Length: 188
Image (cartoon, one colour):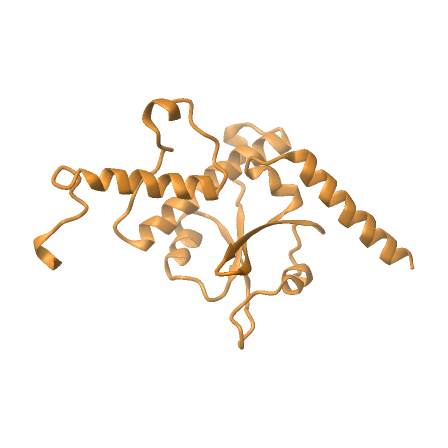
């Protein structure tokens, strides 16, 4: 196809709208985004396809930042204006794509970097737990199964778990069980 076909031109390729909407919906569902009021009418979450990965990273980072602002303002009883001076952070591997550097620099998001194992390129839970900048002693983990293997999709401090819609009772129950176990282990 090469230069002869511009798949991004949805006026020429109207089926690409369906592909776009399906992809936006998959990502919105992966991130547990709340359904918009007009979802039944349009059948798609708000979102935008991008041609490059840099744009995708920056848009995702901005969406995360704006959701964080709402959560942080509510949690700390701040106005929208008062929360503007606060910086969120993202915990990620030092093996990140270069686009994230732009997010950190231009969008005022603080990176909390962890070096992965040189043999597996994975970040171990112990590394996050031992980090100097602990957000909380307890974390909520989103796990995905791919090709019969489980992997961590996302790791949030418990204090930030309400960034996404979830069943708070089950989270509190699970967190309580972990806290009770840790307390019992420390008492021994």
